[in-house]
Length: 168
Image (cartoon, rainbow, N blue to C red; front, side):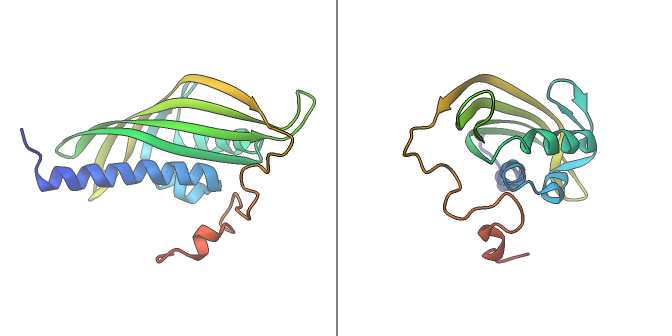
């Protein structure tokens, strides 16, 4: 059955929520992250948690990396009125500084986010999210590798992308 224009618009809005989620991770923007979820949302990573616990966990995990970079691939969205199911494929790169475990390296995770999305008061947000890691790898850096983020990006609202936005 053909999609209605309302379904196509809903799919685009749902995809945008996921892209904001990826941006929030990479810029460590907790306000933007919180805005991706409805109040009372449940996030299943290792165990179910609420948004506050997820953000607190992210604060700890993301601080271990010098740069993160989430890239979204396939996105499948199925809309049914004010509810939707979505699956987003993501490749996430995480730069690890040299430490006792080894030289500077990249940890790369290939995973999927499976969402129950809901439209409440006109806004699509995540009501429930299950995060799956399908496989990972760790890559050593070559001696002449300049690395991610070496051209001035930052992991906060000081990143040039905030200054150049059309809307605050």
